Image (tube, rainbow, N blue to C red; front, side, top):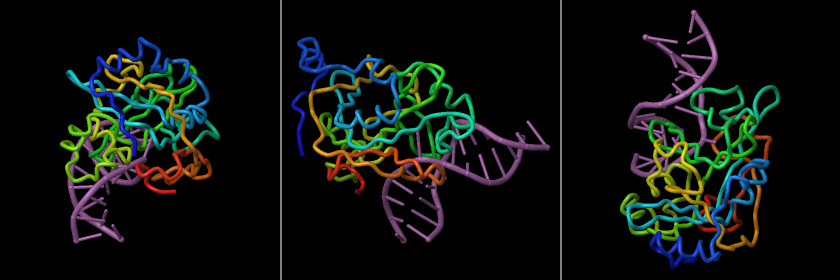
Length: 214
DNA sequence: TGAATGATCACG
DNA sequence: GTGATCATTCAT
């Protein structure tokens, strides 16, 4: 679809210092989870490698938040703070990564104010940079769908459990606003959950080839 | 439609 | 300690 000409981290940082790219700060995440999920569409996730980087443009997200009676039952935090989800109760702007189905990592961004739990699941993205290394990690995937799904997105970007707790403004993970504005954002029920289907908290860029469906 | 595959959590 | 569950993926 669209290519990102930047292929080295030095080039990214140069543009950040010149104000052409903006690294999202914790205040972006420290708001209502559903709003953050919607506004993350079109932002660029950069994973810093040794001397290069891998990057995707976020095209599909889901919101999970709340705890206690009446809270979103699909959220890990719904039944209170446990070792796995305690980071959701903490400061916003950090990665919440968990392992599921014995096979896949899932990448989330912690939202809301400290004390109230929330996170946005990053479900899909359009490959922008580091495409060769992503292909090596997912040799059977079609080029435009290297990160089309929350599990394979982590595979393509080599996001591991060890990334849990990483800040989203560096030095390993960066979420960047490069000025791109999605043309049309659609909303739907969340995918792959058995409860909480009444909440329309999935957001995606309409018609984008990296998204599973409309 | 179901197998793969293991961390997590609610029990006791 | 144990068993059910799970915000998935891919091949059948």
